[in-house]
Image 1 (cartoon, rainbow, N blue to C red):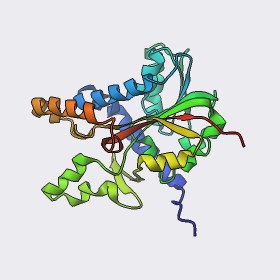
Image 2: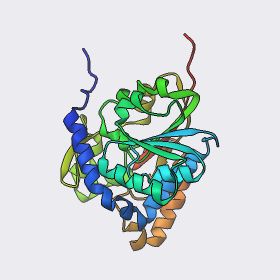
Image 3: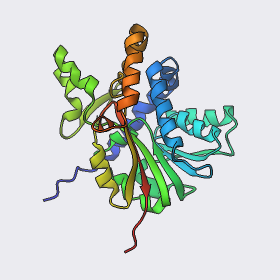
Image 4: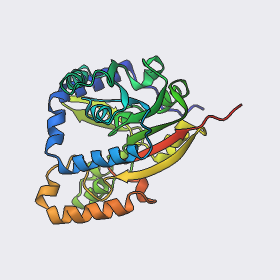
Length: 278
């Protein structure tokens, strides 16, 4: 009996594209004054820069408005960014012009389930940030294409939402059962973005590695915002600055270690592609 999740319908991707196109105009502004989100993004960058080589050509999945793609291009990397939301890609295109990145940053309207059609490959690094890959129920829709576009010895860093987020589970103490348990529900959770509903799915690191297969070896795994609040708690650092600083120290110390590296608002997973003969 086949128990694999059903593939998403084209309507699902249409809803995701519509939702994030509507969100595009406010997306960058949301992060401008967000102390913890800025910290989370910096931790992701530091993680990637541990492994990325100066000559690497990077493919970014679900690139959004191009914040991350522009950052890596500014560091000297050649980046090709893909996304399915036209509104997001409009902002990405504007960044290319405003930051004079034409020689380092290109983009393409493409789903990460169709990366076998990506332009400019193969790539040395495949990057996905802040849960874009949580929009599909079956990661094999992405991973099956990786051998075609990732060079042997290449790496990926994916930032994914796991089922266990301590901050959300703690909401049980306030009687908010629906929010506290939403990541734990089998079959995914209905998300609401800019008036559009679509399904979101949560994955453990073990599940991601299973989908990647034996040709990928973990190089680093760390939790992201395990003890500090999740991204939707924008005001917490300003309301409780001393507590927030304490939580940052705890988070930095424990998030790279088990079991905390499997928890959080997200986890950051880097794996290297080493195909075996035969």
